[in-house]
Image (cartoon, rainbow, N blue to C red):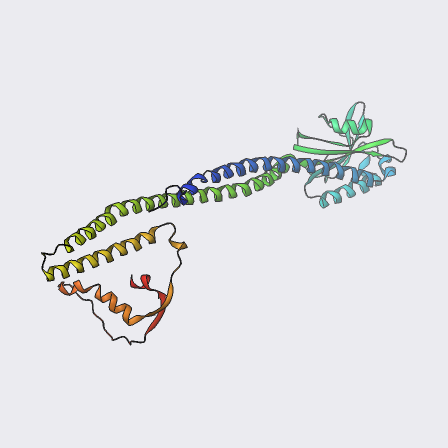
Length: 346
């Protein structure tokens, strides 16, 4: 009989079953938050990198050659223009994410191009002196106050861009021009989103694993509950009636008026009933939650005696027309095995 005061494993398992979906929810929220953090960090780091690159390129340009530029249609034949344009084209190749690199100035309150990295036959080419029709606060700030910065996304006739701008100054700190780097905004944001998704997918995989574990544990809990119900039914519907039969046989055996042959038969029935009760108890043990915790009682067992005992318990089969149970070979009397006698008998 089980102690009802003890908490069963199924009850304990059920009480902690809620933990898995809670952790799954936590990981889901953490995944969303980490995705946001990754996105923001990628964006901020990219902006800082773009501004830093613009400043590095601006500092590397020769101020004398910048001063030699006229900012009009005469510059394509100017050696300084040719050298600067070649240098910008090489820098663009070394920075594959860059679409345009250009140097701009301001004249009469309007922004214009000194030189860019594009081939004259390119659709994006801006000839020297060409007015930039759109507003560019970062370029204006670089030209007027000598401050580097970024801006964007900016939409113009050529596309949507994120721009890094840095002033080009001489040794006296005078602003000569501004250098701008354009990268495609859509590609930049796409890369940021992809990195954010990777962070989210990692947490999503963990959530899927946790939910799968929750489903498995819930199924296991259902199996445990069914097994508990089986044990309860088996105990009441099978073991109890057999115990009643054994008790009735005891009562019959105590009657003196019954012939001796009947007493022998009753004792045999009682013995087999007790064996059946014991077998059912063993089967119920096999279904019990603590079955795996039970230690086998291992000892030396005479195999011949064991088999003879088993055959003796099946003597009633001799009277059955379907009896096909027989010993094929004789077993040596010194045959010994090591094991649990009860389980071997079963």
